[in-house]
Structure formats: C-alpha cells, structure tokens
Image (tube, rainbow, N blue to C red):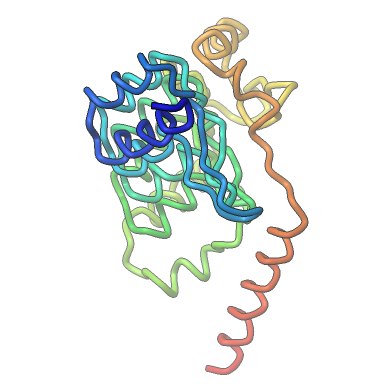
Amino acid sequence: MADNSWNEYLLNAAEKGSLQDVKKALKAGADIDFDHVYSESVSSGTALYNASRMGHVDVVKLLLRKGASVAKRVKTSFAPLHAAAYEGRTEVVDLLVQHGATVDIRDGFMNTPLHATCCEKHVDTVRRLIELGARPDLASVYSDERLGQVCPEFEGLKLIQEARKTKLLRCCNPKCGKPGYRKTLKLCAGCKLTRYCSRDCQKQHWSVGHKKCCGHDVYSVELFKAMADDLIAVAQARARAK
C-alpha cells in the first residue's frame, strides 16, 4: 500500500474508532498529522481531530501518546479541542487540555471551545472547560444576547455568566486550576492566551505540550473575519425585523 493510502487508512480508522487499525496504519508509516485537503476552504481534519470529534477516547489517547498535534486545524479553522467541545466530548476535552491544548484557542470567527460547546448546549463540557481555565469573558460571534435567544434556559450560559461575575480566572495548568484574579495570574508572553498562578505551573504546562501549541493558537484570517461580520449583520437584521 502506498504511503498516501496509509494516510487515508489512518483517517478512516480514527473516525471509526478502530484502535487496531490506527496502530496498523501508524506502524506502516502513516503521517500522524495528515489532513486531506480538498480545497482552499475544506479539509478532512487529522486523525486526532476526527477521533476527538467522534469521542473515541482510546484512539485519542493513543494518538496523543504518539505525538499527534493538538494545535493543527482543519481548513475551517477548528482545532481538535473545538471539535470535541462542539460535540460535547467532555472526556476528550480533558485529555486534549492535559496534553497541552490551549483552552482558549480561537477559530476563524474568534470563538473559543467554550463558545462552541455553549452554543450546542453541552452543560457538562461548559463546566469542565471553566474548571480547566477557559475565560468566560471573551467576546465572540456568539454574544450572550444571541445565545440567550437560542437557548434562554440553558444552564451552561448561566454557568458562564456566574463565572464572569466572580471576576476570577483559573490557572491554565490543568494539574492546578487554582482560581485567581487576572492581575495576580501570569500571562504567557508567547501566546498571551494562557495564564498561570506560578512559574512552576507555567513550566509544567509547557513541558506537557504547550510548547507545541504556543504561537499556533491565534487564528486570524480576513476571510473568516468578513464571514463573521456577515453573520452578525444578518442576525442584527433579523432582530430588527421582529
């Protein structure tokens, strides 16, 4: 089988959750971070991305052990953590952050995984992301007003609002998670997206995987900004028409 065929084999195995076939593909030399690009705006996602999206915990664990990138995105700008959060795969979300994934990584619409999971009403995932240090006060396409219109009784939105009122954030070292005020937490100078209660926590998070993510966390493309502006304009027009 040609190398590229093994790459495709790996993607299919990861999406189906076949641990043995994933092992087989990797042993045959498949590129663990292969992403089938179909066009400038569409790609399949890596094996880790698809296993995360589908919630195949054992496959995710294996791919993380083998060094799969937690920061590589699909062409639509979602990272594996966005995909897991969007689908409410709380255990996978935890695994990805434990292996260095940046909890406040942004997609092309400036949405974090917390925004993605809140929009889909996954309350357990919302709670866990906040525990892992997700900032509840970051602006995005999904404003409180819009989310409130879609799901006014959603407990996850209430959790975000309550966390915002405390004005406390958590240390982004998942082994810690200690709450503190913004001025007392140290911001990562590289990505400016993660914060720590101490130098030791920063070093620990760096060693478990943040060093591979830092600098790849921010996603800013004019095309997606324009798309976000269009969505906001449509939402505002609909609101005025009511």
